[in-house]
Length: 558
Ligand SMILES: Cc1cc2nc3c(=O)[nH]c(=O)nc-3n(C[C@H](O)[C@H](O)[C@H](O)COP(=O)(O)OP(=O)(O)OC[C@H]3O[C@@H](n4cnc5c(N)ncnc54)[C@H](O)[C@@H]3O)c2cc1C
Image (cartoon, rainbow, N blue to C red; front, side, top):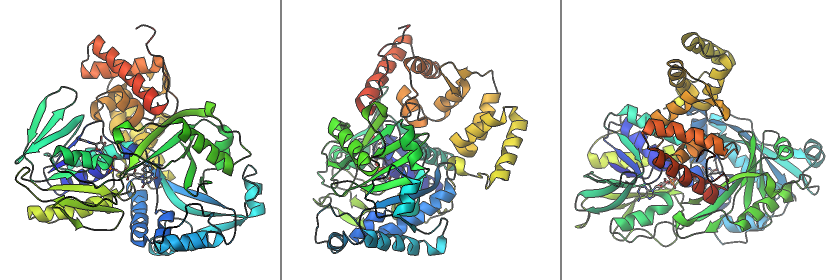
């Protein structure tokens, strides 16, 4: 099987196929998890607002997979108490009913207590058999304002319910790929390899780093390229209109007052134009988003000034008592939601798994030009990747005449395997690792937070040779960075500072630190000085252009 696209859907599918012993090759034209999967709001959630559209099946499935992720990835997925400020008791009923009946309806609706209560009751009912977190509750105006004085004063009540959040989505996506590779010796995932075309039973790929052409003869191609699905199908000779994407931007802020006001909860609020937005604590910073703007080419998306203004205005609207301004922005990011186009499906193709509006696999059967089936994974939330992968894997196994060997429901992911269940177990785990590696307990605790139980492999690597903290970031050591570069497919400095770690998004990257990190990548990858300098310059450009992270253009030495 050839899986094109290493976002969460491609990675989830790759792992599932590999667990069944299927020889799978996954390629991504960029680094793994660079598209929508890196741009999410970091919520692992049921999707409260989808209830308004009657998406009960989707919400039920998402809640089930949310609960599975809390258990299978306890190192990165955590409960998230979420508070909704409510501005009226009865408003929004008409708009919600119209949306529910698919009669359209204006976006601006000011959803009142009754509507919120209805949604949260469904949430609780859907999880009653598998309750991991408390039921929803309402809090009076007086109590809400006493607890959060910065909240807008016309709030009539707040409602609090539980969902989940993910600390390192890019790392969990990578761990699925690593798990797939270790489950099946024939399964391989390659970043910086793009699909370019196909003829007969041969698919042409290109290694974007070396320029080398690669040819493969898969039994099927899975197009998991998200917002690029139609572009990828076009490379294969098919004109499709499967995706109608919208971009969404988020800001990462350094704002202590806002961070404290969130009190470990996410605020899920309505914007003046009737959309819902979020503000939450993320790795010591505040994450706010997002926008929703129709786009045609996912390669061209950037966070615009208007989006920054819109996001800042929206949070000021809900927490007017807090000063929020541009100078607090550490970074931003954007990505395209790969939503199903209203334009239709593939020519000559048929939807073989019409699960719901949310995600589906559309198959183009073999033609004279391309002699293998092409299966496009359309839509799908981050939260539902496992369920989506399971459906597509079963479909592909049927084509291969095989049956499923391994279920993924209870399959722990990466560093979530054998994760200590409670604090005493954690202390025992750390003590045992300390005995073997002689590393300080607090250092091991940091590694456990960063890598889950994969910290064991990291710690053993650290203990094997002389190590020291980085000169310009004492939270990481040289050997830790070397481990990441060697064992986690880092090909370029951006992979390291944006996706294997969150150093750049958290505003921790300086010119000197970038020099230090580039030197380690260069040493492992055997780069010349010119190549290292050119990779550094490229990284600086990407960071400024796409992430709003400004670093000195040249190192002092350079
Ligand atoms: C702003 C925003 C907020 C969101 N928030 C949430 C949330 O909080 N919770 C949630 O559950 N979901 C959320 N989602 C939805 C979720 O992130 C996406 O649905 C999901 O990540 C889609 O994953 P994917 O693998 O299909 O696509 P992508 O992650 O976009 O992956 C596609 C990959 O294909 C690669 N590719 C493209 N062309 C080629 C080619 N020719 N050859 C090789 N590779 C190629 C790209 O480089 C890319 O890495 C959000 C999405 C957005 C945009």
